[in-house]
Length: 360
Image 1 (cartoon, helix red, strand yellow):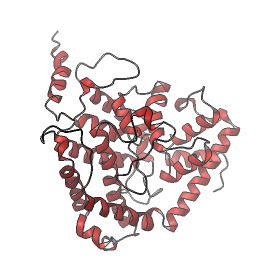
Image 2 (cartoon, one colour; image 1 turned 180 degrees about the vertical axis):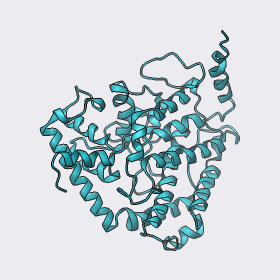
Image 3 (cartoon, rainbow, N blue to C red; image 1 turned 90 degrees about the vertical axis):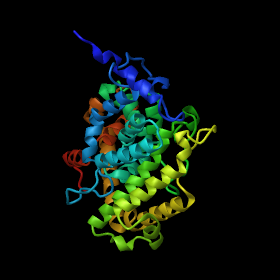
Image 4 (cartoon, rainbow, N blue to C red; image 1 turned 135 degrees about the vertical axis):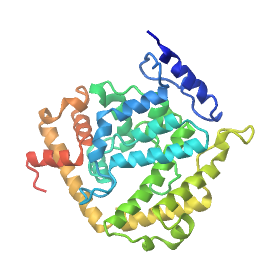
């Protein structure tokens, strides 16, 4: 029997040597927590991408809220479509800069696996309930490291796990640095991803959500295109595609040294120009005022937080109701309850609360 496939991975790894000298190479990965026999037909980063796509957590993103809870329409963004858009934008940037698309795609697809039901309202509720707090980026790492695959985790490479952990930004700026909370930044080499691919996903996340949230807000009747600040429309464009194109091209231009074609230098950072970053931050502030913090959104968030508080209290009183499929039996009860709730889809959480007597 022919075994021609035995040389495929070596050929793919050799092809990676043609990438920028600043690109992450799968052959040079810091590896997995548990050593495994390499795949004959995939690089390590391709293997990570596939494990994420085939995970239960990834499938559940289809029924998790991005911004609008239980919207009456088929075209609103879900957490699943969000990660697909992030991955697409990030891959475009990585390809333009001659960086590793496979690593970029794996981080992009996995970065929100730990998001709660009901969007950031659910995240805030669990942060209030756990003494150590709750952050969705840390939960995403927890999912791939400990909770998936019957408690064995996905055993991803260090580079993918680090990119997932460090994708979050502070509210104040799209480019600001954010400490990693309970998982100390110094344990992971600092607050920014060490790979340029991880940095790409970090900024692509903002490009994606700002633009698709505008489209959803217009769809919901909260905004009109002409309501956007004049400087935003003048600088970024007057349509969804124009804004994304402007931001992506600006990132590529300002990060061009990542291609490695500009002579000897230290590894660059993935960034935007001062002008586009300032306008993007203005757009972000506008979206908080008009969409994320509007009265209806606050009411929905309070209702979802009330529901999650109810579920948490029920599981603390009745731990036998916590599924063993997505928790670790030796963890403290509060952690198990939080892990179980965080993994729920919106509808599953609503149904679980109703079955246990939630009155709303």
